Length: 294
Image (cartoon, rainbow, N blue to C red):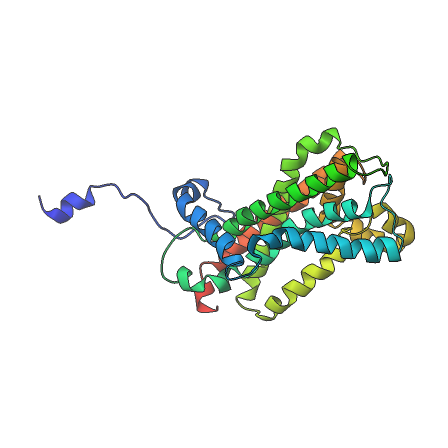
């Protein structure tokens, strides 16, 4: 028997073929490349603050200084209430903590094809691993900022004389699901933008600006009820923003303020999953031919 015939009888470890399904998230293949996913997560964490003086301290500095600025401008100067006597700093820190995870996911995944074109053109691996690594690495950052929020919550509750009603709700058990929805929403939008930037480079410059504008339309620094009271004719623009719903749910779970309902939770979940699936379809379609246009 010839060597060629003998080799032909051996089973292949992996078979690489063009994707035929519109929605294709091969968990088995992703699991096979889990070591690569871990390396990408490690790379994202290490390189982000490499050759910086403060390094990971920026994880703490950014939300704290942003909360201070928001408190001074929106609560002290503009006199926007927080509800239930919640300290303005704590109210803003809750909104910023949840918003930062979403914005980091969408910003980090929005240039997937452009940032990884060198490695994409040389070796095969499931391309979806690269945006997934951004979501997982930002989850670590979110965990650190969540600890910062919990620390300030404990400080305001037990070490200040000001009385206020900030009681975590029983719905806080759904917090992991809410975090998952934030990740899916940011990942889906990021994959859509990344796919579009392979042909339309102008979108790269609009991402940062657009995310900044979206923050002001997501009830990060004000309660949704206050916006509906002051500007009722435009309230729907903010109310139907899925990130507004997610931030309101996060504040309700942790501080007992904001609106919570099963319908709101279902709405946020439906929109997040839908956008993720659309992003996955667009991403899978783009990865087949992006190397010719990027």
